[in-house]
Amino acid sequence: MSKIITDIAIIGAGPAGLFTVFQCGMLGLKCHVFDSLNHIGGQCCALYPEKPIYDIPAFPEIAAGELIDRLEAQAAPFAPHYHLNQQVVGISGEQGDFTLTTAKGLQVRAHSIIIAAGGGAFGPNRPPLANIEDYEGQSVFYAVRNRAQFAGKHIVIAGGGDSAIDWAIALCDQAKSVALIHRREKFRAAEASLTKLHGLIDAGKITLYAPAQLHGLVGENGRLHAVIIDNLAGEQRSLPCDDLLAFFGLTAQLGPIAEWGLALDHHTVQIDPLTAQTSQPGIYAVGDIATYPHKLKLILTGFAECAQAAHHIKSCQNPDHALHFEYSTSKGKPGL
Image (tube, rainbow, N blue to C red; front, side, top):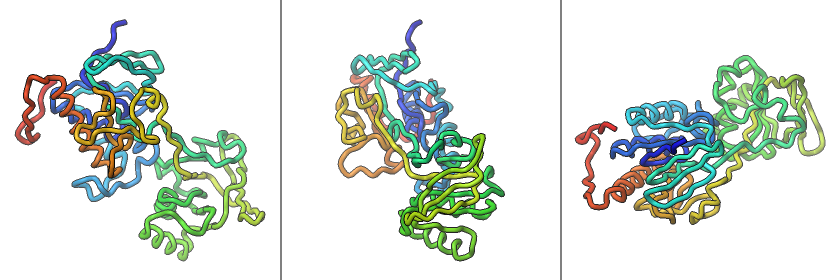
């Protein structure tokens, strides 16, 4: 079977990867996009599609899932090819002629590569509870994708960060009960959220157990009936529970990216902030996986890096042709 040939291979279909498609498309560059997940959107869709984001320009507030929908629509005119559930495990070649190979054996040749893999391969930190895997996806969840499914239920939320606090607040009006469990009395969340949380606790809409920790699960056939908590003094109690939301953060690893010979800084890839190019010519990195001195890990920062990478690639692809910068309002959308 002949290899697929394209201008740009984008690794990662999160916000940065999708905006990269748009930026490359505006320069007439064709893109193939790879993601190890079976859907686009990265963490925004996999973990918190309904969570509001407040720092996207022109949107005072936008849900993470809606942001992905809009980025997908923005990229759509440039007809990107999405290869989902396809982890890129190998890269060979050099600038102008790279070959990418996925875990399923698909091969794509590309002039340049842009890594937009977010935090890398990620998964939830599971609480150390016996048989928790038996309940995952049925009554144990590590993210909220549809808040309506928790209406009228006894909800137990475990964790002490923004996700735990935000969802305790968001679900308390529609759930039958909400219990919040945390190992310490002090939380790691925004002050405004904590003020609202304590108001809801005082009003009896949320029950707080702190310090306390999860000790065991009670249920059958994947459905919870109760959770057992421990107050750290050895005293246990049972709480009614239809659904457990465990927010203990994520574990992230670079995965195969760590083996590609790029200059790394812990779990990130070092780039030149002027071009977004890595230590290997022709390979670029944008978004959270890219790092340089004083970088701000914001979605809008990643968007700027997408533009830098696309323009640098276009210049390298046609070194004898001067690339004159034009605004999208005057340039319009080119056909591919």
